Amino acid sequence: MGFTSRKPDSNDPPKKPSNPWGNQNPELDDVAILLNNLGKRCCVCKRVALNRYIKPIYENPYCPDCYFPNYE
Image 1 (tube, rainbow, N blue to C red):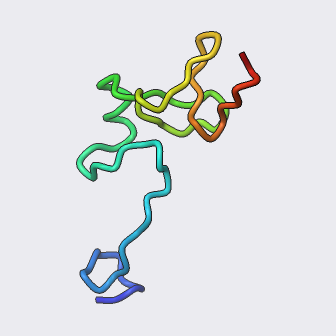
Image 2 (cartoon, one colour):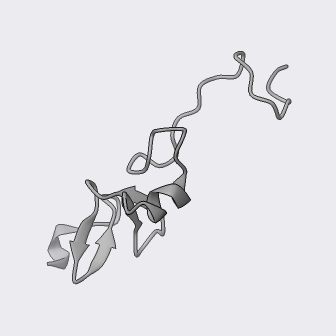
């Protein structure tokens, strides 16, 4: 099966993660991260980011893409 198949195959090219600040483990999805308090949703772009990347400003979580140091 190739690129037009819905089933994953070893012939498919490796996919680049769309969220570099989120989970890279394929066993956890965004809902599991939020339920286990391993990350939060960015208040600007609404992507799930892990707690180690979150920058809290005035109680609002920001991912590194949306964080600007002159907010403080």
